[in-house]
Image 1 (cartoon, rainbow, N blue to C red):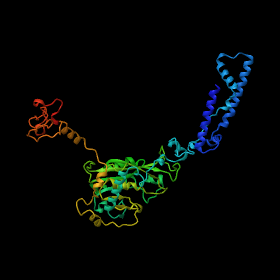
Image 2: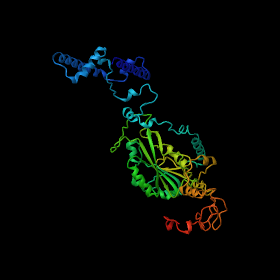
Image 3: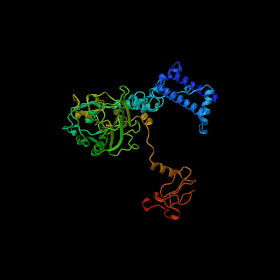
Image 4: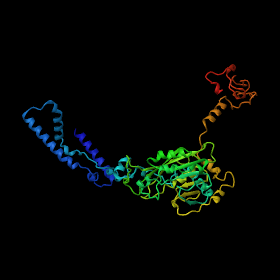
Length: 468
């Protein structure tokens, strides 16, 4: 028993030395003050219990015999007394009041990755610890994607129109006076929710019924995309209703995850009906017309960016949204006709027409703006270089084409067949297509005029008449 206790004490001392080295403490005996324990409260209670127990044991042993059920406990106490060990030699239980004990002297802000508990203790949001979220260093570990973004940014800057802006009250302004149909429309309505949560002050707050009454279809091109910031609460449902009313189908939901690295702490402006602290905002994306990523590479480049924006929450009273939303739109859609509704002086950008009451001046001329896209039928597109086409993510081959190519090549050899009404030109696997016969292959594998016929000209089992 003595050897066992000695081994336990050595292990305990070793743990103390390692903890002291981690926390930068010279004397391991000072760990209790660093770890904020309350063992001094527990030790007197244990001493009292131990003394009372020993006194009761001595009294009972002098008067009455000890029951056999207590014999192992007495033997253990006797061995501890003989070996010179008492209960005081063992470490008392340590109670941790918060997670600060685990955060000292470590390279990581939270070595246990308990970001939820860390948020409760300090107010720092878990998204603060996601690295490489900025536009400058996001693609450092992905050279191919970094080169693609650089080339696309150069092409966008080269083909962008001069920034234009128009101060107008969108309640009364007729959007058809812009005399243009746009490929991209970004709507940033002044919602009352922004005043409650962010302290943003607008001359007028729009409700969703007013937003839905905007004449967006009159300025949307036949194939176009629309993005609308809709806040975090009821705007998700009302934003979808707006897309449906304007003739768009919702295809993506871009989420802005707000960090608070510069101003850590719990949110003081809570929504009255909120259950959790809200630290995100949504921007719905809609599509109009038929646009396929596998065939419309001249108009869209899919899978270049993701649907998350991780950026610092702006100061209280700020109206601006992340500038990254413009990068996402420009990287995705190759259309040059871009409209920003409810724009402000801080959102004026090359390649965009900003319209809204928050602008202080105007330089928009409908005729001059239309002349940028009248030179040729493809003038409203940015175009694409060979290097961008090589680097950009490609969509997978449609299943129908894959199955047809596999069927052509499944006959063995090179899978080449003769034309309708001809004979296969020898060699195994060159499926002829005349009267269901092929030279060098099993009968019944070909078909006249592209029709499939089984052995002996019978219709195969399980095939319906409308699939022949």
